[in-house]
Length: 296
Image (cartoon, rainbow, N blue to C red; front, side, top):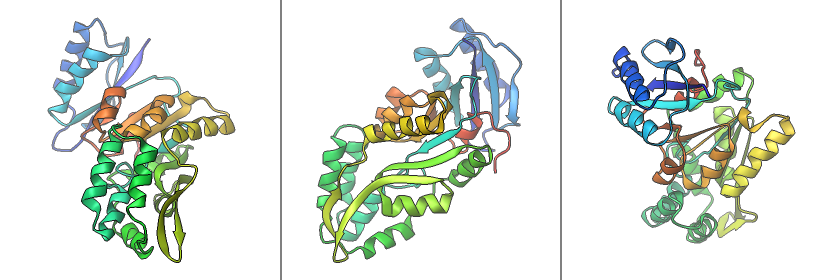
């Protein structure tokens, strides 16, 4: 089946060049995959589409990404049909924002290192997400809610986040922030960035302090995939019309359920399961993967 291989540069100092295209052609030819048309530049030096006769997988994809990774180029493989997505589901922590909000909140309790270690294991899929979430929140019992506002003020968006949402919304897509983090943060970030709506977990609060509990049910990896299926049904679209993006193990079911699942600065657990990865560039790479030529 013919597919599109897209090369996206991470920096003007490391542009995509003809030599990169030539080496990709050589690698593909070695695996009996041929170009089906001339390269199509989405943005000179920044991103190029290569039509090929079959999708590169396994060793072929590893060969390509290893070669291009040395020069800071990300690689995406997409189906030419339904290429521009009608729905985006995006994780928040370490995807749209540059940190794990629970870890940052823990800083105000002097527990960032301890809670961060648990978070890291959970994001690699080495701990049960629900249990790890309850454990971390439990450690924050009696923390004053002022810390939540201070944490929000410290949060920074990852490069390209605003452009990703603005461009996809102009293209007619619905954009949803879906996070295992907390609604206090997802609501504010969704509004700041321009998401249409948001979903997250809710911290239980009493007398302006955290009780150390999460209000059930917990939004976990299964809930993320369920939200995808719900939006697909309600919007009367197909999974192929969806792009999902995230970084951790709890995003994998959602990424796999989407027509285009992209791991952003992915944890090792995601690298093992997902082919389309933004390792070197920013979030606008996900737009070039859809064939956009104008980035807002």
